[in-house]
Amino acid sequence: MSEVGTGDDWLQPRLLLDTHIVVRLLSDPRKLSREQGRLLEAAVRRVEPLALSDISLLEIGILVGEGKLSLKADLGEFFARLQAHPLLRILPITCGIAEDIAVLGPLRDSMDRAIVATARVHALRLVTSDQRIVE
Image (cartoon, rainbow, N blue to C red; front, side, top):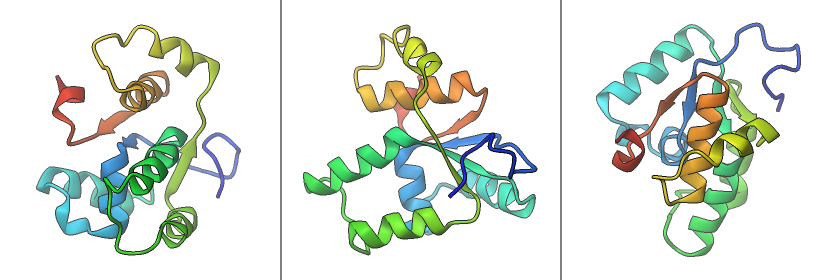
């Protein structure tokens, strides 16, 4: 899977998907809210990449390992589907993102802080259902 900015993408993403949004997108899109579904469908129609912080991969692995997240497929199959998805682009944690994490004190969850910082640094709209992040 290519990463954003490698030159093989003709469109840059506008949306960053929170961990649970990408899980719903790949496992059960019916669990997306109407607004989330509308945003993602519009991006797909435009053949616009959808960004995902690489910290979400770690979070998915941890949640599945702790039994807090149940997937319809096993974890390996889920990650294979994620990697094969033609529009998903994984954004790495950079020094700029790590620096921005430091100013996100109100968020206690380090995964959420990394995801929010990724959206901020890349100027992407974050698609999330997490009310703590929204606030």
